[in-house]
Image (cartoon, rainbow, N blue to C red; front, top):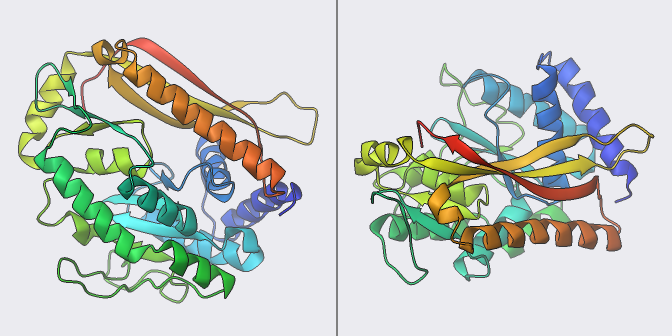
Length: 318
C-alpha cells in the first residue's frame, strides 16, 4: 500500500463517522484515528477503546463504523472488534495471531509484577504463579482461535473470520449482542465475543489487558486478591511511561505528539534498570516496525516514536 493510504483511512473514518452520526469529542476522534492507524500500520496488534461512550452503545457504534469503513477501503479488512466482559477492543486479526504465537514461543519477553506482595515484587522469568498459569491457558485458547496461517488464508481469499466461533471443551463463543439481546452487526461478522475465556480463571481484566495491549510490564494478581492489589499500589509512587508518536503529515503543519500507549511501574522497581531496559526494547521494536513498513512499501503513517516518563505520580487504583 502507498503512503496515500493513511490519508485514505482518515478520510474514510471521518466520512463513516458522519454517516452513522457518531458525534465524538475532538480528542476522542483524534485518538480513534491514531488507534486505527496504529493497527493498520501494524504498530500494535490490539487497542482498547475506552473512550467515545459506554457499552453497549459504544459497541454498536464501532460495529457500524467498521462495517461501513471496510466497504469503502480494503486497508481496513484485517480489523475486527473483540469484546471481553465490559471491555471492547479493536484488533488487527493477522497481527494479533502473530502476537499470540510470539508470546507462547517466548519471542516476546514480558516482565510481571506480583501485586499480591507488599511491596510489589518483580517476578523472575522462571518463577511460577497460579495467575500466570491461567494466563498462559487463555493465551493457548486464543491461539486456537487466531491462527497465523488461517488468518493469512482468510485475507488472501477475502474470507472473513467468523463471529460465531466453534464450541470447545473450555469455552463457548457467542456473537456480540446489544442490550435488547439482538445480534450487533451480525451481517458483517466483524465482532467476536470472548468473554467466556475469563470464566473459571483467576486472571483479572487488568492482567489480561497488560498482555493484550503489549505492556512491557504486566501487573499480576488474582480475583481473590483485588483488594490487596489496590492497597499495594495505593500508597506507592509510580513511574508513568508513555509511548508517543508523531504522524507523518503531507502538509507543513507542525507535527503533533500523540499517545500510542501508556503504562505504570512501581517507582522502586522501575529504578532497578530492568524495566527501563524493557521500555527501550519496546520503543526499539516500534522503530523497527516503522523501518520495515517503509522499506516494504506498506503504510507508514508515522514520523517518529519516542518514550517519555513521569516519576512522581501516586496511584489510587490498579
